[in-house]
Length: 306
Image (cartoon, rainbow, N blue to C red):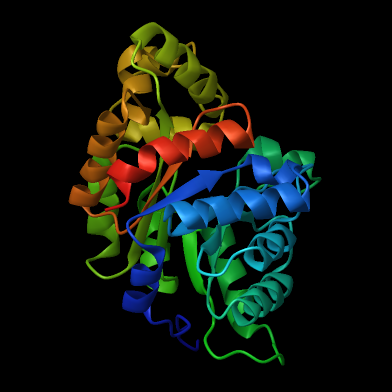
């Protein structure tokens, strides 16, 4: 069998371009193109290095949404966090990602993930074994033809939490994008990836110093993810108990997953991810609108971007 090779990408240059801190945001998939472009431009002006966008059923298709965001910015990297492999075949992923990399002079990163069984079933697909399914998808990507102009292929990263997917990310891609994680997990992921590959954890944040109010906002966030088997298994593997995982999460779990407090507290958590081995941390303000998100990012920029 022919050994598969990872597409050649200048990772040190990409890390410099990403910078230390970016933004993770899901709501732009449901906003107008004009609103999305203005938001991305504002993030770029604040100094954030990248915007990581989600893909969900009913939102904009992630590669099309990336094109909208790239067209409204000059320096900002746009990354899918993640593009669901059940939403497009491998050849379409290659063609779309390559076209975005070419149009943006290398400002696009393709984050790929297997999503979750209940969410894949809604699309009418059968959920396969995650690592095996992703490996087959990467094989198909490597074999897909592409005849368009391209100076350098886009970086590929995998949504990876546990050992098998982290090992696959290390073997076949340029790194990993981790979500719903702690700095302790970041250290484990760095060990699995080795010293050179890209590691990008997401960090949910709440700019609120009152513990009760902050945890109520945070628990609204954690409750959804604690219904999904992949995240439950990931947290159990890290030592969290069933009691911690019940009813939206114990206070200890909520505090570990969602950082709340003043900007300095948020900065300290982001710094902890970097010290654990992260190259780039994308912060997700838990707010209700794009405007509120931008206000939070403006308050955080002086302490996060230095």
